[in-house]
Figure (spheres, rainbow over the protein chains, first blue to last red):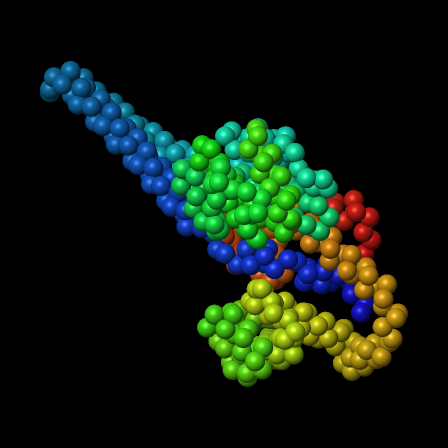
Length: 238
Length: 186
């Protein structure tokens, strides 16, 4: 009864839509792990290549010095010493380079994390429209009462949301040929061809529509069929 | 057993419904209770109470997500137990508990306004959570609905613990700004 402010919010969270809670149950999709494995593999290969290159350069330099200086002269001993030193230096350089690569890999992954963070941090409707290849599928006209809420990029899928009072409309736009996006959108329900679809055929619940250029637009909303049809037509006309 | 089959058992008033629910969702509900209560006995009790509540609620209810339906009951029951235990600790015993029990005698009319406010807050929070990008929304719900710690959330979504913390910090700030903007005073 005498709930603290935090307890009030905790309690209010009990009424969060079941769909969101069900969605949060899903673990991270494997596609990202595969991508990370590739990235780690490529970074390791690049580091190895530079290491081998560095050692090769050091050895070549040393051999050249030996050949050039002949043998048995005091100069040779000096040059051998210099060559050895240079070789050691170059090995050290390699080590430095290697650690630089490691650092840059770490930094890159940190940056990537930031970029991912940024990409899911939300964008304006205008920004969403300017997303290459996908933005043009943001409807130009929304039915009365719908206002834009948020949009973001998620594994090459452009997600946009609108709201009309207590009704939400979520649109997920992706290129069908994009494997990452296709994986991310594997929850797709039935897919309809836009050319063959009519207002009466709009199903209840989540479904997807294939537009020209194999762009998939997934619609998830409890709003009326007429309104959804209006939205789809607005995309088609563009 | 499929959810629809379990639901059918409830609707037929077949007591096997409870055993099947325990098999399918016992661990899930226990996990929710334990995250809130951090105590085995209390969590077990809470899960058993969940089955009783579910039995009384179905019919007339036929939830579309049985798992979440049960989880919500567990969460609410766990929260009530947590509050009682907190009150008992604060008052060092019976006095707080006695007062807490007496509060149950207070006529509901007194709390009508509170109920309206609570319903409004629920609506606002739901709208807010809907407006979040999927990842932020998931992290926020795992922390404040399921009461999971940052390490568990990081493991679930293959994220760094610091990223989880940063995300939560950002979402809390967003929520504060949103509630301020909507004129919600708690």
